[in-house]
Amino acid sequence: MKLTFNIIISFLCVIILFSCQNHRESKSPNIIFILTDDQGYADLGVYGAEDFTTPNLDSMAADGALFTSYYATQPVCSASRASILTGCYPNRIGIHGALSPNSKKGINPEETTLAEMLKKRGYATAIFGKWHLGDAPLFSPTKHGFDDFFGILYSNDMWPKHPQQGTVFNFPEIYLYNNQTPIKKLEEQSFLTQELTEKTIKFIEKNKTNPFFVYLSHPQPHVPLYAGIDFVGSQQRGLYGDVIHEIDYGVGQIIKTLKINGLEDNTIIIYTSDNGPWLSYGEHSGSSGIYREGKGTNWEGGHRVPAIVKFPNAISSNTIINAPAMGIDWLPTIAEWTQSSLPKLKIDGASLVPLLTGNTTQSPHKNFFFYYRSNELHAVRHKNWKLYVPHTFRTLNGREGTNDGIPIDYEMNEITTPTLFNLINDPEEQFNLSDKNPEIVAKISKIADSIRNVLGDRLTGIKGIEVRPIGNIYP
Image (cartoon, rainbow, N blue to C red; front, side, top):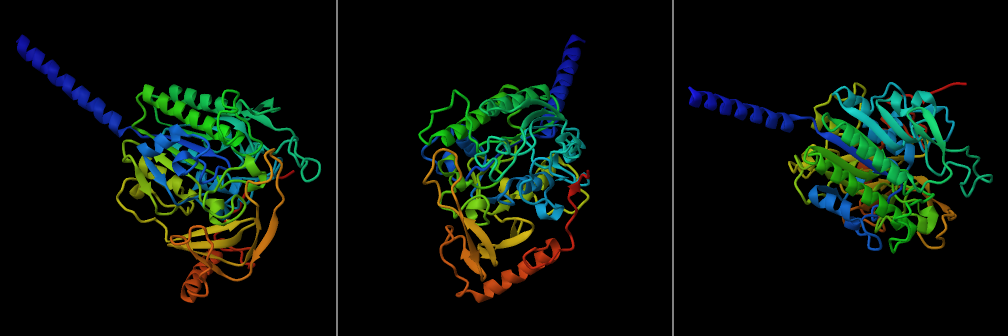
């Protein structure tokens, strides 16, 4: 009798253990999305940086997947962030440029954000850092799916200490917010990177028994540059290197927290930048490496940025992804991994799960569209070709000339006829091949016309038929 009882108990223990194991494996993955501001393609060790170190992000890339051809959707703050959170080209949802303080515009409440999508699946959600999708109460992160918000409502340079304050700009004071309450006027920002990292860690620890989504949106390395006192002077690259090194250290602390709490294997960590480096600020800006130009242009240096994804339960170590992808793709990727329902309104992105898990080497898109300013179509990437249509653009002199955070003057240039580059043979975009490939020019020009009819193009006067309204407030 005693033997039978012991067998039954042992059998029940095995069942319970098996059930717990399956529960752990079936638990929805946690999501940590880390977004930096104005970080260039070559601004991590694993992407070629030599004068500052990023050991934790290099290790994260070795443990997961690294993209070599990932694009921020637009080379500017608000527009790029809108596409990450909605899966849409920002011009589809009416977001252009970088929204200013006291703007009457912001993200439309009708759009479904990544946070709102995940909340329907029972996720705890938080944003720590920069929002920049409208600063009126209607547009607050807590009105768009986030349970918690701690950070700033727009860029960290939109304050009275801007070097062009009084001549070009007239910015009000900038405040640090806790949810919808301003709690502190910012006089300096050296504490922010550490504070945002600590908020993220506390949120992870608080929600370790249920699925969570953290959007850690660092205001750095957008000018003005600020690093914590323990990091100032730590890197050969100067203050910019110090800033990136501190961000990297914070990533290491977050991963350590996941390990301690047994969450590492079932947590998706995404690290990327909202656009390329702001070369106007000389040595206070990053580097786009071999790629042409930077922020504020649709050349490769304006859009092509670092992108690393770690998810031990699904992504093999040392995965290199050469196929192009874009900021519009994160929402559907996360939707697939969390078994979430996609937004009811049309989105433009596609899931990157097949790429990330090695089931394909092909991009989910044949075409990528590069817009800027007030809905101007500037370029189209079709497979390995990139065609620039006529438009004006600014060009900069790179990092030479200043190391004090004062912007360098730029000059305007113009593309007057369609200009074609092969990004595989000529990633630096130095050799115009339009005359030698008229059939390719004609083909991609037709593709450009097709997207103009859908999303518009201010330069041609075409408004598009699928552009949704931006959110507005009225006096």
